Length: 182
Image (cartoon, rainbow, N blue to C red; front, side, top):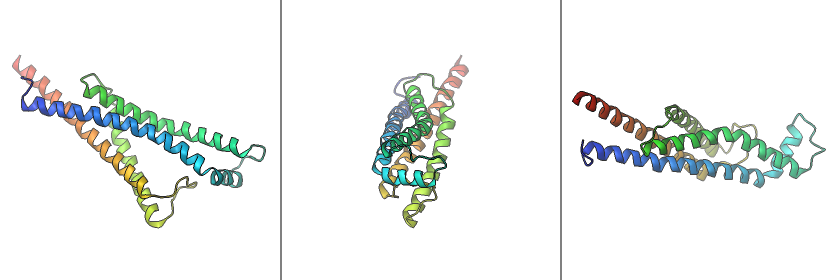
């Protein structure tokens, strides 16, 4: 098959999409870490009072700054699972976009992340409209900017999923055509 056939052009376009969107997903995961840490430090007084008043453990022996740092570390560690999954998705998409073998699990992880992102958008939209959140401890006030970022993330994940499916279909068809020709 020649390099400039219509199929090859579409394959390269989908591969390029995987590389670009995969990189964007990795950058969004790094942004999530920065966002989480900044939100903890911006809302440190509310967090400390909520933990001191509602926590089961006696935190009176710890200073406020120690509580904030411990809370930030706990949040980052819990978030690291989701961040690692996003980095896995992004790196796998980049690998597949560059023609290397990628772990198939990144496609189901992408679908899972799309579902989680839709749920987050729904929660953000509801809290933006009502001014309240169903979460027990609200770190951030609902904002239109947060909703827009979640929508951007959803678009990126959807674009990645579509491109991954297209690349796999093109490659499967190429193998089938190669086997038929032989």
